[in-house]
Image (cartoon, rainbow, N blue to C red; front, side, top):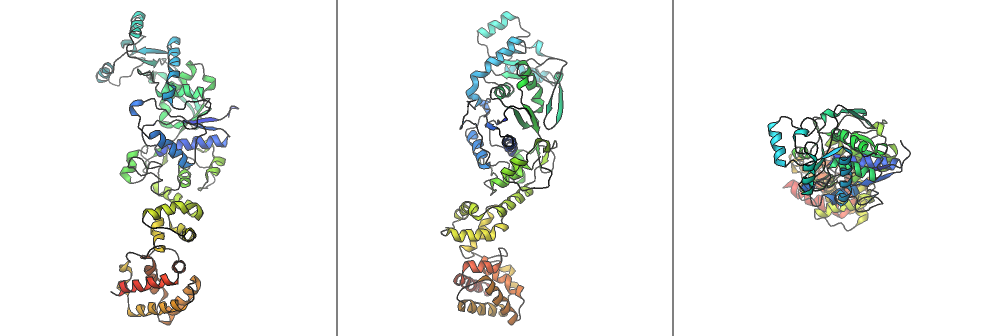
Length: 500
């Protein structure tokens, strides 16, 4: 680790919903920055205006805020290195592209899109680079006076890096160790487009330098771009200031074959976004807690070696280290994601869940008037909930009588003796001053024994009378919360249905 201040950046393009792989990249950036008391920066790389999607930038910001990994510097909270949108930094880039041309490390290319398409059709595996550049329309192949005239006439052109022949370039990746590339396999990438906007290759280098980025975390799919960036850092004279790079492993499809895509979610029925995006449900919309989502993401490709699985964000910051990131891809496992959520619901205090549960119930038409009652219910049922919507099934019967009963579980074994049992039990409840769970349970079991019935034979019907189905916490705890009058009312109504 160098002595300079740790500054990392998450630099997404606002071209659509933020895929969970992008959120994980942001998370690892955040954890590393906070571990080393550094800065986490959000930079919007919107140089490709043809793919810009309205609302995508705000969606990215909302995702990071929901996850609790809010940037220290961003378009909405700018610092001294503003602006943080590349489209607003457009005037910065041309000078560096022109500098590279003057130094002989880049050149003007005047080829039209039609000319390039023709070459691609006629030449197998055509690349604009060492092999073909001399036969194309650029400042390396044309006479200087013709180049000058084309520029004077404002002929549309791009600026391309001139990749040298027969060289090897390398760097030390924080995850993968020494990585080398042969320049003969690299084409002359466009650095500045005809509209004056930089491509990713130029912009990322210029911005990382000007924003004093110390470490750059990005997905391994960017590894093929590394030789271009290495050469740009060298040619611009900034090699000593180049960030340390870490190329993160891919998040793989559930079967482990290939990178997880947005289409996989639609095909297999799980979310691939943090928040809902254009009709596609996100982890938030499906009922995940942000703490669980972040915890799950952190374990995709990283562990601290201890066997621990449940971490708060603060614990992740304390335990995070680059040397524990795997080189291999991590398989996406939605069942494991749900397990994390269930564990987080269990460990989250009822007060912290209250507003979220209220939203779930209100959306289903249940008006919660008593917060103390709701908190008691949450504590009673949260261990049974995997996703937030589960609170409706597990809590609805505390607020409204069941709309239907699981009669198939009751009627085939119903007898007159059971009807007598419950009528007698009603009389006992009415005679009692209050309904206390432990006392009611003892009386219930004693009455069953007195009537010659097995406790289990009447316990299940009692549960279905109160909740409608074979679920819920301890049935006498349910009865105690409902109270004596409501419990009696539900038994009486259910008996009508059971004996019909």
